[in-house]
Length: 340
Ligand SMILES: [Zn+2]
Image (cartoon, rainbow, N blue to C red; front, side, top):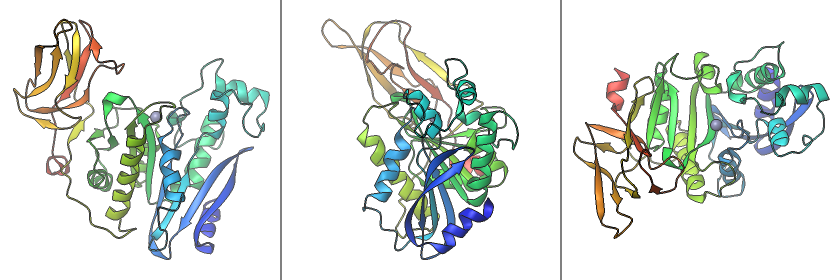
């Protein structure tokens, strides 16, 4: 299996589309082979069936605005990792109708589709999802130097990367991409069987990338932001030419609890800071406007030196009621502090 992708990458030039068999299914795989040596970058999307940023960004790589001629190394694109789950979720009888009834039931787990990002690195024998994850690991992750897995988060979460706190190359890459903040994970702070954490365990530079705009909301600004982050990553990896603007990043440690900032009143909330923007104690994070005359009735103040991991009410609706959380606020770290 290892050989097959390598063979494609060495024998083709430019963009080629493939229909890749996995178990008794197929997933789309696109390779962009550069004209000179460099790293192999794997980018994946739709591992979670309702997070559409991946294919939206990868379309931009393929629609003519990205010039593959100066590319050093290779890009391997998996735009729809969970073709099977996407089909089930949309109520299609899977795109190619290749699954047995038993497997459909297993994947659906009764009603709920399982979380496809909880089975890595997978196993050659076992549950369907374990075998599927094993195939992704063996065919693609092991053949890549860098793995970027694209996801969507809530509108209030901003654009952020997550990576292992013990993998310096991953931290340095995340720092180059212009994200709002970087969420550092240790072995116990998140589900460890995710694609990116398992990839970093076999010494791949690996990031989970989150961009706002769940499900089928058209979120053009998120797509542009994600595409620019991807170009930044390729510049940092020296795969494409171009200057990187220095972008001091805000780092959070996932295991450190965030302070929840709650409104005690009704009102209209407006933020005064962005996700990951560093604040001093006393800075105004946001204001509440009275619903009677729209005057400011409350200022939410930074309780200590830190930054917002999320800012705004969780349902995105800015008319809020007593008890609504309007921000989560954390201590932050600089690149130098996390690398020492
Ligand atoms: Zn996701």
